[in-house]
Length: 132
Image 1 (cartoon, helix red, strand yellow):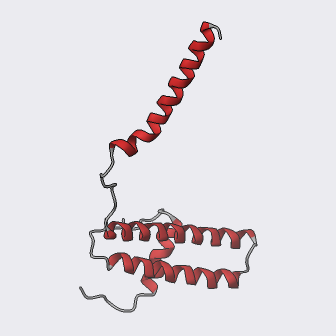
Image 2 (tube, helix red, strand yellow; image 1 turned 120 degrees about the vertical axis):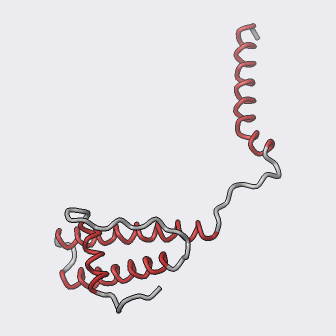
């Protein structure tokens, strides 16, 4: 084997060793340390946020499907009512956590149409005044 071949082989071995150390070093150097984990309240709050986002997206998709003719108006109304009821359930669950949740911004004229519709739906379906 010629000297340039040995240099290339040595560089390849060094590269493989560097990559192996890069991959294995966090395991070796942090042995016994605990990884960060979120509290159960943080996990529930994150889960609620994900559910709200998914529900809001499904409402927008329902409206789009109705407008594009994929679903009938009757199906749209039924499915939208179910989604809105689930949104209300999620919002009640969020309020019941007892964890300080950032206040929802008040919906202003010209705001997001889905947010306005949800606020209107909530106002029309309130079951009386809530007492703290």
